Length: 128
Image (tube, rainbow, N blue to C red; front, side, top):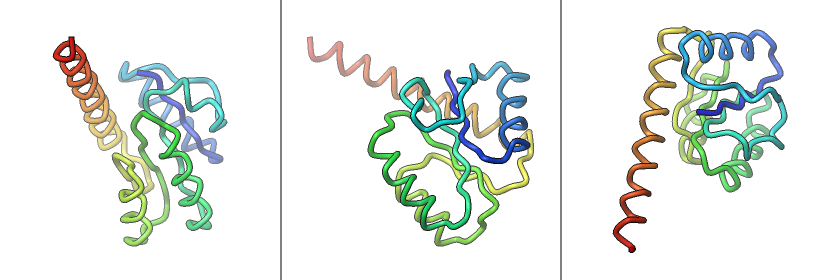
């Protein structure tokens, strides 16, 4: 899987990159720009304050990006978290990032993507 990590916080970026690389979960796309989202299977995006601006950006992104989105944020507001899920994210991780939690979430998202790919393949076979 190809991961794109979007974070203005270098520590968050490095922590997530280490977790992905040290556990052989996939490849990090060496970019911190949303413009490179097309190269990614999984997008990990930090939701920053102000939340309304970040949620608007997330809304635009969910309409463009066909992969899975994981949010990492210090924002613990239940309404912000609920809004994020309603926009189509797969998981919302509240900081601090715990390696064991992040690994399990990333593995679940990878399995979900593999399952969706299998379903698409079966649908394509049945169309023939």
